[in-house]
Length: 454
Ligand code: UGA
Image (tube, rainbow, N blue to C red):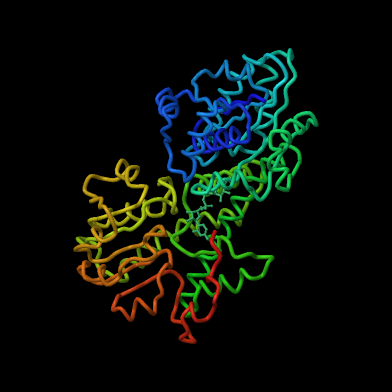
């Protein structure tokens, strides 16, 4: 089968590459010629573990090509995935202009029956919007179907998420289109992935509702953390105690500086806009957004609580990406908090294992980028941990203490044990962990990790 994937951003690149690995012939199309040249040289524009190896393998086995020739790719493909961006407009709603442009080009190049699939996160009603554009544009000559197939990939584990998803969602009106999609995804069928087959609108909403729910879990636990700090409880234990109830589940209950990235902030905003445009106020998600915004501000108060006056202070930042295993700094709480600190007159030293190149472009020249955590710590009034990269979990604390001007650590990802830090002579604050009443450390209370990995 020949397919094409339009848009070689995060979603398109992972989708195209993984389908090629399933044995399908894939053309990945983008109008950015420079990016296509890069990809043809085997250079990957994003940081995603395992992706480069898979791209190299499928290029050399001749199942994966990168091209700017959109019309040709449409003509030779049975299935066309639309994976172009839907960036938020000023009012928070999704901008569909790229989708519209692609739909018009598909209409102009339809040369037989085709399945057109939305892979980008699109507002409810976009499937119908695309269908109308193609219908009008090609004058009823050829049959086609529009399918909604939202992606649930997480940055940092996108290849694994594609190859072994929790579920596959397909929204379509036509049995023929579903049969073709099932065939395309047959390797997932073989590993017994549940397929949710529904109508287009329901499928489109499943995506938004899933991200909004996960964001709700994060804002919920962050509010619980704020209460923990007031009553002297420990949010990690609260999350553990809650999460062991299968109905709740332990994932996405890590308290911290709030959620970020290219998805949760955009999708929570968009779903509230979708609801309002249909005369409904989605109160829970509107609060989730507000709690997330306030949580970032709270982190500044925490830093101030330890360092006192911020003006003139030198603060070290560990982690700039919105989460570990990615170089993505979009809507990163770390970047936001750094910006707020700069506005307070702080001078910043920073390090991130993958996100520095992107951060450098977005931050003022006064920010000093370092080669590791120890270089950051040297001469700082405090060190703030903002992204829970693995290398930050096992730092040589004695060395850090000797390098810092004052032994202060603000651990906004709760990766260290407050008791240990106190014993080592650090002034230490974290998120939602009041004094433990029993005096037991987490490790001695449970054999298992306090919360499961995400
Ligand atoms: C998210 C979803 O998890 C994917 O299923 C979805 O496909 C993707 O959005 C998308 O719509 O494209 P991603 O943005 O890569 O994936 O990141 P997550 O791992 O979900 O983390 C999102 C944010 O929540 C991060 O800032 C993370 O630090 C934060 N988070 C997550 C917490 O603060 N606490 C948690 O317990 C979990």
